Length: 190
Image 1 (tube, rainbow, N blue to C red):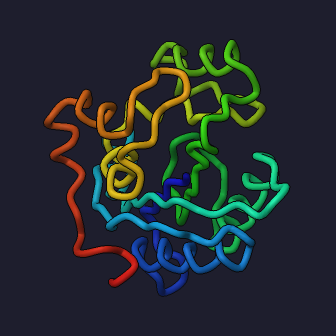
Image 2: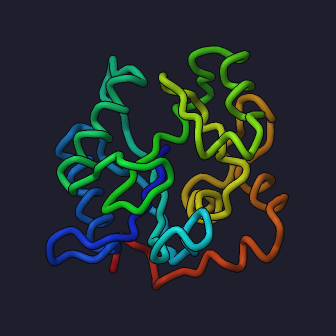
Image 3: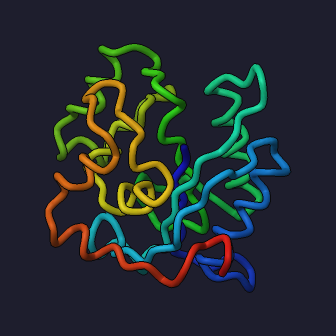
């Protein structure tokens, strides 16, 4: 599962167009999207850091033999095609494609996952892991991820907490959920 976010234009494409173009690029990279959420407008995170985002989530099909590192490399290639620069953690971006989970994999191991999941919020903005952590350590905290993910994988169960996407979303404060507003119908038909 992957999550998309964009809040800057790339060429003549706005954030919504960038996300839809990135979906097509994922197929070219060998990660065809089998389910795509609606597009959502969400407040910039952290608040005040830039223009509002467009977010979406998708379920992709992996090629046989693909490792998590292979998937991440494909996602980074797609981001680069749309001008992604990693100048600042949680900064504005033309495109962000996050690998949220691969089935029930916990990578690189449970202790490392728990370290990053439980990292003090004050340190989260400063510290970044030097390796892939799955599932994404912040997945249960972010309405802008869970609302779109509930469109495409509400029954996916977190391999550490045991909670489904629907249950994690229900635990998010109502005000945070309300800030994630659908732009229109299914992104695949927009």
